[in-house]
Image 1: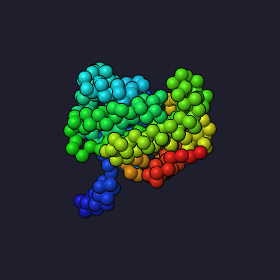
Image 2: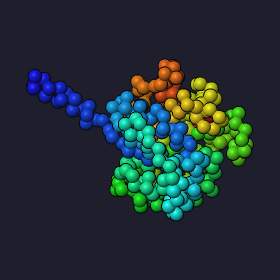
Image 3: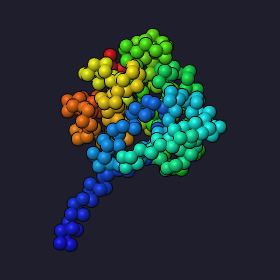
Image 4: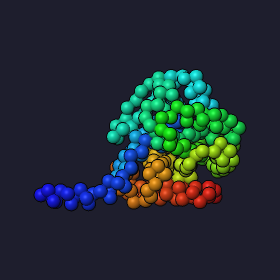
Length: 275
């Protein structure tokens, strides 16, 4: 019996060694909420990895607001944290306290969606990144950039006006701004291309990935973004992942996974434009 147990443990060792525990903090807004608070933990768990997920949340929060909040230690955040698949929420948190809550392996940054394609709105990005790094407790922390998505074609709110209410124009502006700004700031090890994945999924499923024109739907929209994050964070190809919720069909899950994987491949190859 002891010999059988030993053989069982030895057989499991390669799998245990490959499993990853990754702590990721999104300094974001409702678009990071769409991406990380639903499905991401389960996708990673289905492939044997464990995520600790933090989201420093203020709705519509911009780079400038994050920077000034951290500079002045304002208790302005709702801190959402997913551990073991369960989400805990703490209100009136400071960004400094959130950063120091864990030894985060990865910190992600992003711009407010309406400003995502406007390069002049990124003037405080380098200062924000440096300030966050000064508070991190992990000397080897990585910074990643979350590339968000363009709005739905039928979206009519004023925030879409800078892009002439044109999805393609907004997508192109996001790509152009990201390509011009991020290299100047430096220090981002990866880009999480949710914006590419959403656009690719739109080609196959239609422009149906949003619930209100700009936030992602609770089903295929959020699932597509979560698949993209999972592949980048864990380094494992998302195609063939066996987790999807009952609200998504088998066919839709395959399309979302394929869009996420293709987006990651495109971004790594330096290809963004898909029109």
